[in-house]
Length: 215
Image (tube, rainbow, N blue to C red; front, side):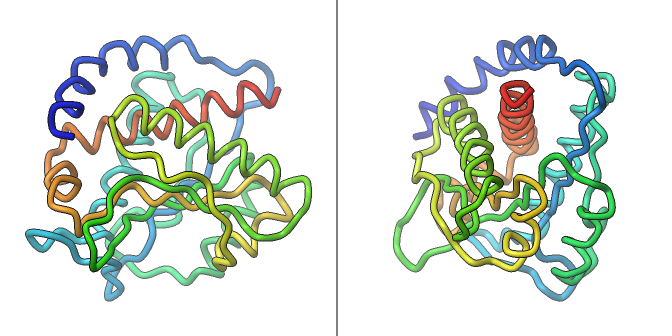
C-alpha cells in the first residue's frame, strides 16, 4: 500500500487540475462538514496515539482551505466544530438544517482489533429519495478517495447513526470512515500533513462531482 500511496502523491497535481475544472452554475451550494467527536470524546485512539478527533478536524479545515484557494469559495462550506470542542449530535444536525445544506458529510476514522483497512461510507437505513441520493454522494466520495489515494474500497453500508437519522429526510447525508487508525499503514498515512491534504482534496472532489451530476 505504501507504494500505491507514493503513486498517489504523484497524481495530486492532476487532482488539483481536475478540481479547478469542477464548477457549479447557478445558486451557490451549501456543504456542512461534520468532524466527528471532539473535546473529551477523542473517538478512536490509533497507532502512535493518533486521535480520531484530531485527524478529522484537520481534514475538515483542509476542505475549507481548498475550497477557498482552488475553487475561489465556490461552495459555502461550514463545519459543525472548528476547534477541539464536544458538540452534541443534535446540535450538529440542527445546524445543517438551519443552513439548508445541500450535502452533509460526517468525517470519522475507523478502528478494529484486527488488521482491518480501507474506507467505507455509511448512509441511513431508511428508504426515501434522500437515501438514494445519499448513496450517490457516498459512492462519489468513495470512488475519488480509493482510486486516487490507494485505499481499499469497503463499499457503501447502511446504519442508524443519529447524524444520519436526523438529516436523511432533509438532504443527502453520509458518514465517511476514512481508514483505520488502528492499522499501522493507515495511521502512518494520517500522521503526514500532506496526506491529510490529499484526503481532504479527494473528499472535496467527490462532493463536487456529486453536486455537478445532481444539477
